[in-house]
Structures are given as C-alpha cells and as structure tokens.
Image 1 (cartoon, rainbow, N blue to C red):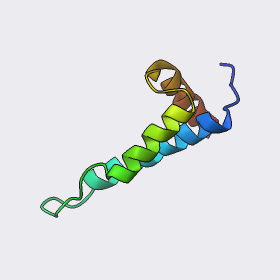
Image 2: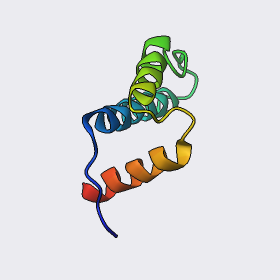
Image 3: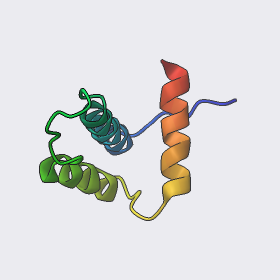
Length: 75
C-alpha cells in the first residue's frame, strides 16, 4: 500500500482525534462505581473539530479515516 505524506494540518487533525479517542477510553477505563467525568470534555472536542476543519476534513470521514489507517500503519 502506498504511503501518503500527511500535511501539517492533516497530522494535527489525526493527533487531535487520537487525543479525543484516548480521552474517551480513559473515561471508560475507570473502576466500576467511580464517578466518571463527562466522556468528552468540551475543550477536547473543540480541539478535534477545529483541527478537522483546518485540515479540510470536516464532513470527509472517508479521507480522514484513510489518514488514520496510514498513520497507524506507519507506527
């Protein structure tokens, strides 16, 4: 599979999404019965939305998830 080089904005969008994903996972990984924070703090969601918009990926989930697959394969 050919590897595309991400632009700075695309990379920022992928990183923001991954932070959002880790935030959600952390909320669900808390011990049962503990008081959980809101699943997605507004600041984390806003960062992800702004990064997606700046990269031109808002509403283009197919392209965005392709970038995520490529970033994951590069690790």
